[in-house]
Length: 161
Image (cartoon, rainbow, N blue to C red; front, side, top):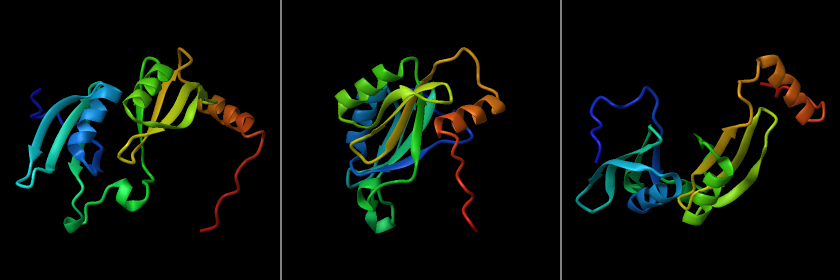
């Protein structure tokens, strides 16, 4: 396993999985993750694990309802989507599906300039997967115009507070 001391970035997703050891195997197969550390508790469930996916750290832990640590499967979903930038989105989505993910949004050319799609992993976590279609980032004005065009000119009204 790779040395992780002093390698934690400023913001790192830390997810809860029902079956964290199986999740590690899935993330290795689906996203090419590299295992950095795995610390099992006395009951064999993982107290902590860390992976690297293309240089980005992902930490995970086994679900433990006695401690109030629940996975998306126990909670009925999650409002969080983890995002991966990859060289080829369609190939990455196909790899994730082959490993056991389910497509929730097929890859498409998105208005903001990415080839973009979404999958849900077997542990209830949503992943968006994309690669840029342009050789430059769109300006804010270009993004606003593309968003309006993509929404057929409709602009959502602000929600009252």
